[in-house]
Length: 79
Image: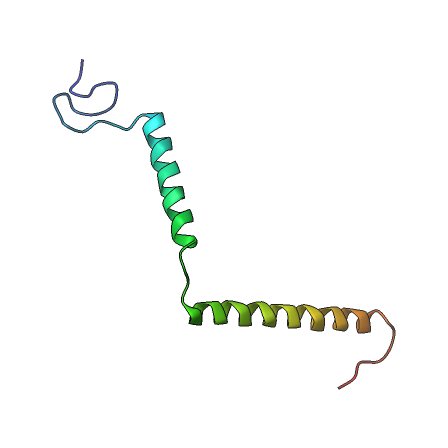
């Protein structure tokens, strides 16, 4: 048998590969940490920026709908 064991680590070494359950637990834990960080209180400036971005998106959607409506109405474009 070679110096590598089934877990692909050197025999006698302190390192061993994580099992499937351990890897899943790490993924679950990191997901929970990310979720908790996203729920933290956000600074007031960041909230204002998010609200302004949402408002701009809504305004652009209205303008886009108006342009598509005018393009399909048969009327000449206004400038």
